[in-house]
Length: 99
Image 1 (cartoon, rainbow, N blue to C red):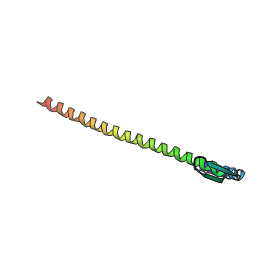
Image 2 (image 1 turned 60 degrees about the vertical axis):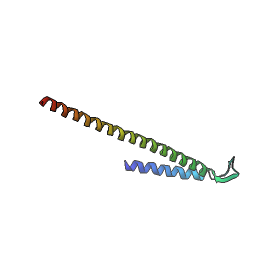
Image 3 (image 1 turned 90 degrees about the vertical axis):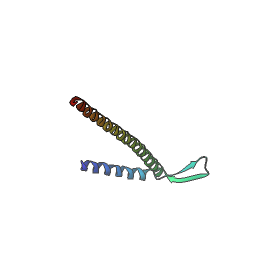
Image 4 (image 1 turned 30 degrees about the vertical axis):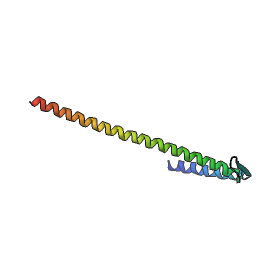
């Protein structure tokens, strides 16, 4: 499994290098409402866009995972409280049966 991951990683690196070499042309990026114009390589713009997208996707996944973890914690706490209540009722019934 590690060999497959290594091969996929190497293929990704090779693809990135070939892509970068093929798209070295400078492109002007105008940030419309602002008076900024950036001259950057095309590959850099595309790779930065992909990186920002991956980061934002990971961040949203983290938020969802933390929310689910919080829900699980609250549900487990509720389950424990209900189990304790059931045990208290069982003890109560045993005491009443002895009387």
